[in-house]
Length: 278
Image 1 (cartoon, helix red, strand yellow):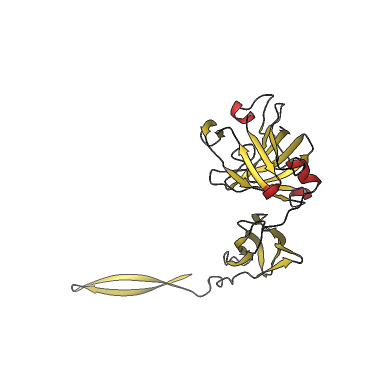
Image 2 (cartoon, rainbow, N blue to C red; image 1 turned 60 degrees about the vertical axis):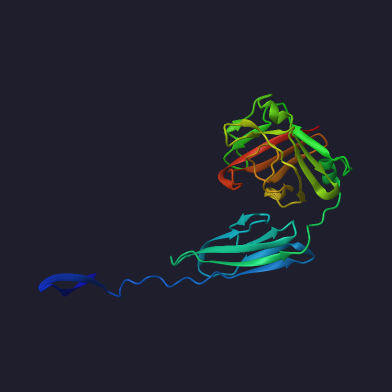
């Protein structure tokens, strides 16, 4: 309820009635929210993995922002994040309070002193050509379904490429993995298809990068491939973190989220990509 205090303002000899609202104290704003509490603990024996825990009370929703980590984001109360490359990384937790007082956040940093170690194993041998010095390249299959697109991880109802349905500039691309120094190279013969500009073929040199093979970190415990954010495998608008659905001597099937030109994954959109060994 509002009450009004009547005020007389005197300007040049004239009295002008005015009023100002006075609010009852029965309506009060929620208290200022406290910063969320969380813990970050290194996994015993693994200096590249950390367990993050939300210790906040009275929150009904949370969001972890984990740039440079795997996963990049999370909404779990407890999760494990991997930092595969040496460097300093920031961990930020946002929580929404059940009393409606807002969405406060808190951050901390972790320092990774070395890259995550890798050793040759049967899976890496399949990917890289027995971990030999020559490496191994993968290219799109010509059969139907080389590229599938859908709204979710298991739904590819939006699009499936027909037999020989990709552009010639896509079929001549080789996506190559070498075990020594964990080298990744997009051998695109000097040109790639730009999905953000009408799928035009444009001259582009993706250079030489690196990769990390992650065992059991994907959806349903699948292995994953992690390449630098500016790189891609298969199609340019696929994310740089790929779940390995199947890996044999002759075939590689991966799934990845669709991303925008800035490298940010879309809310909806997944690819399934099918490759054969060159």
